[in-house]
Image 1 (cartoon, each protein chain N blue to C red):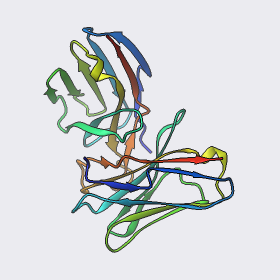
Image 2 (image 1 turned 60 degrees about the vertical axis):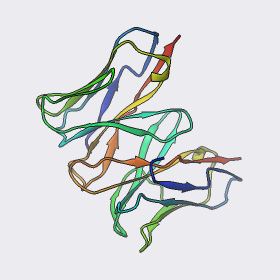
Image 3 (image 1 turned 120 degrees about the vertical axis):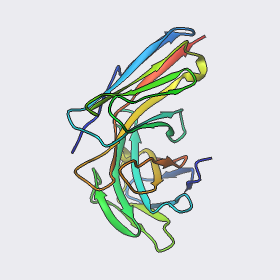
Length: 112
Length: 113
């Protein structure tokens, strides 16, 4: 089974700061997704990256897929309290058809 | 609204009991996944069904079972419940493929007392 490791596990910053969180694996993924989860709610899909080296932007969020398709990063510019949540990366397990596996997530807290 | 419906939203039951959690996937999605989320374990994959058949199995206990019906809704059955089974249980659905993107329901919060 492929594993996804996310870092840091926790991140607490002030409003206006920039941050980057990481998702790493020793395995190649055909695609990676990033989700955000708020307390008591289900994860919500933010973006899917497919091509090695791909960069996608979603307002102040920038997602990058590593050239070798083994890792990904999420960069947030000028963080706001509304960005607070659990950020999860996920990928399709190549050893099983369609099984979507998740990293443990980065818990982000943005203080006003 | 993700289009995935889970019921009930909250469930409180005693140890040793059995409960059934229900999930209706998004219209057109053939895959259903069940996940357990506890504070210290993150999202743990339990089981996946595709068009009525079991497709993949994760860390699912023998006391737990699931099925997907012809109308594609799914049920997760948890029996001989223990205190440690208290968690959020999420259902997700997707269109199958290499770019699988999951759409999650709001979850069922199970509390075993």
